[in-house]
Image (cartoon, rainbow, N blue to C red):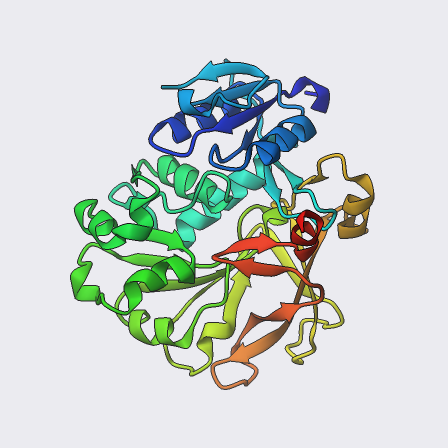
Length: 356
């Protein structure tokens, strides 16, 4: 199916089971969903609707205030999964406006399958929808869970910051994927004994801390994740065991459908620092209508593998004593530009400067 045949559909739903129903409905119609937080400023919503050319918007009635598109209130044959686009996630942009990352069905499928394996999600799991619909980890929360016939636990967004412990206990949640900042709301006052059902805790979007590793790595399956939206949510993972003092820096090895390089390192674990490059089927098509930026950040190699330049600095390091039989894993050291993260969200300082 040609790209032009795929319609872009905005989803302005941030609460309840309508989130899942809306995304599944758009994908079933062979279209591309664009998640938008209805609490964002009207100007930002209007810009994303224009920029994404979304002619249809799925909304709750309360979100109809600035929408001029065709509204669908939410209060066929199987196809081969290939290069069809699945969704567009907007991230902070250096031009002062957010930029849309265009992702494919095959990348989303590869990610949700890899996450289910890494997180050991099965039909007995109860997975918390911890991420907002506009933050791509929500895709793993939703689709990895449904694909394994597991239970998706959906709580009011406000309760995740005001009463997270109650949400986890009452929902008998077994799996959580969130940021260290959100988990930090519990970390000082809660122990594993207070969460008897919790089996897997995956943290990402910001640096892990030594205190979290020390407290939780022996109590459950603690996973440190690393990735970029431009390669579909996250791409590397490491199960923490608490054996090394600086283990919180290690983000592990890539999923089976992902390739990772450190520019300048031949992969021998020489501790060479360089930009982290991510390749494989999870890598997005590029930025929506940002051809020059896409060419500067995405490229194909001689084997027609698509790669993305993350802008993150990293190195390979050997664990297990540093000998030949030790594991080679990735460590993230920082950025080569001025991008920062706040509670897991990427922020380009130029976007703030343009508003000021």
